[in-house]
Every structure is written in structure tokens, then in C-alpha cells.
Image (tube, rainbow, N blue to C red; front, top):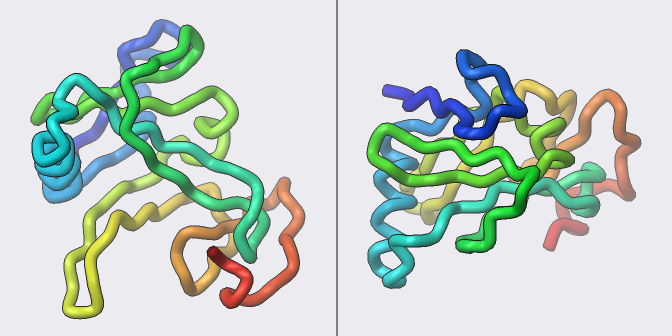
Length: 139
């Protein structure tokens, strides 16, 4: 089951889905916030330059929401925050939490990515040139 997360800001149309978050991922975010005593924080999802494919995903907990951020809320009340620049790259993405014998972590399936690195944290869009290659350059 996927929580279709809608923005709470006026900058994005009310019916538009900004980010899809699976129920498992939303529950994991809530669990992490509770473990850290940060229930008043949101998960910031952002894109930064770097990684082996040119762009890389980042996530952090914070309670400093900026005026132009898009704030989205999952069905279980978890808030995600995305800045306007990152939103251009992650609009329509699906966030899931994968738990396996090799370790767990959040995975972003991004319809805007034309290529991704094997590490899963680095990607390239059609409008962004690739960086120097190979997953060994991911950090």
C-alpha cells in the first residue's frame, strides 16, 4: 500500500501527488523520529550535486521548515519537506524502506532519473550531465 502524499502549501496544486511513500517507509520514519525523541521534526528529502551519476539523494530530520518548502504529510502523520530545487528532481518519486539480510535503508524510485548507480543513492536526469563514473566514487 502506498501513501499518496499531498502538499500542504499553495504552490503545488491540491490534487497533485508530490511524493509516494509506502506505508512501511512512513512507519519506519515515525519509528526513527520516536526513537530519537524528535516527533516534532520532519524528514527533509533533498537532492545535491555529487555521487557517481551527478546527483545524489539526501535525507535528514529537521524542524526548520522554510517559507518556500513543500510540506507533505503521510497517512500516519509523518511530515516530509522538500525544497523547490529538489522538488524539480524528485516530483513523483516513490520512497520505500527495504529491510534485507544485507541491511536496510530507504530506497527512492525516481521517474525523473534516466540512469542510476548501483549504490542507489546517485542518479542522473536527462537535463544533468553525469559525473565521473563508477560506484566506487560514491561516498
